[in-house]
Image (tube, one colour):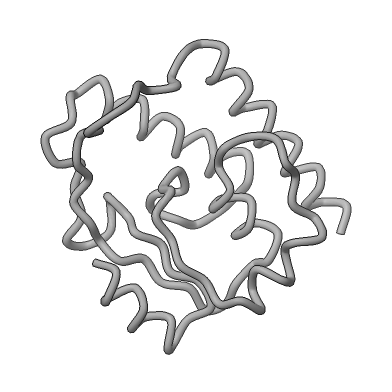
Length: 133
């Protein structure tokens, strides 16, 4: 979907590849993987108030000026950089392009109870930084 995302950048500051946007899906991922991912999305929307269908996506494109607007306030901790840039820069307009998620080809998942707790901690930290603008 990269060509679609680049095309969407002509009209938007930020474009997110979304498993939940029209044309997107979780593909052949397990029910547990879908549940975890959707749960993380619900938590992100509740804590940050973002109106994204898939706030935990890691597939995104943005304009350089959007990144530069967020750069001074980015935190080096955590692993949800897309969500952090989006929340800090508040891009308008933005678009979501559906994509079909595929299973990991190499490596292992980082998912664990400790990672989940750190995820929530990072979201709360991001909310504090958003409020302190």
